[in-house]
Length: 317
Image (tube, rainbow, N blue to C red; front, side):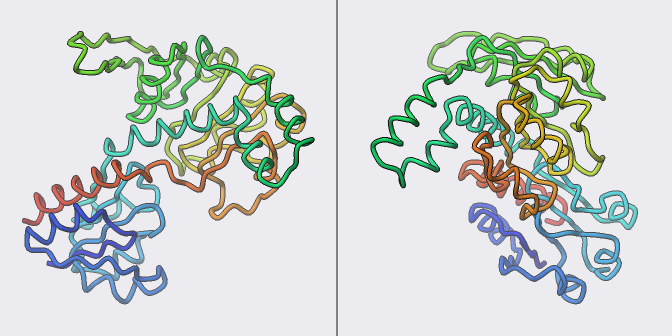
């Protein structure tokens, strides 16, 4: 059987599939060519770049499995694929820690002005260095602050776990989950029992009003969740991090809040359009940026590759 890993797959996953007797192609086929070429494969493995829509599914009757390396499946017509008898799988847990850690990379970068100083310091002289040192001397700590988490799926829970470990208070909102138990993981060498904290879902407005920072962990495809109204509910000087999906934040409303000073910073890993077309917000000193790399760690990709190989082999092996 043939597997097209159109957005790539970690070598560990490729080796596992080949050891199980699968032929694996990792050379990318452009989206516009897939409709004539995908029928040569039994499995397609995608991340966020390749779209598997109804037209492509209909043109590929030999396709048996659609595998998404990652969490969100908004680039796949999941219900339609399953109605046609295809297996659709993803790896919801494999990248949770990687995305959660990126949230704190953005938070720490913005609170200590690293996003600004890293842009300016290499090209400036002694006078500017002293100015930067002065302007960066009013950083803030995460310890003792309140992090509001919108969406308490696996990544949201991992974000809460890290926040609590850093001494933060956590408020959460989820439209579908009433409460979750967060286990604070201690190093195994300590030989201590991991404490558990129960996190209860609050209203969205309550979380927005009472948090120092907001981190989004909600799926895309459902439209805007954070717009002008929601931003205005946030505390003056609060910060917003979006490592979830583009389109859930109104970027123009966010930019306006940064210009007015109502929000002090934003951390963005995802954008309404990728590559981003609304460049005003990208150029602001108050914005920490990354190019949609939430799951792009060596460890996460290895876990994703291995989990995909296991699931594909279980279905077709």
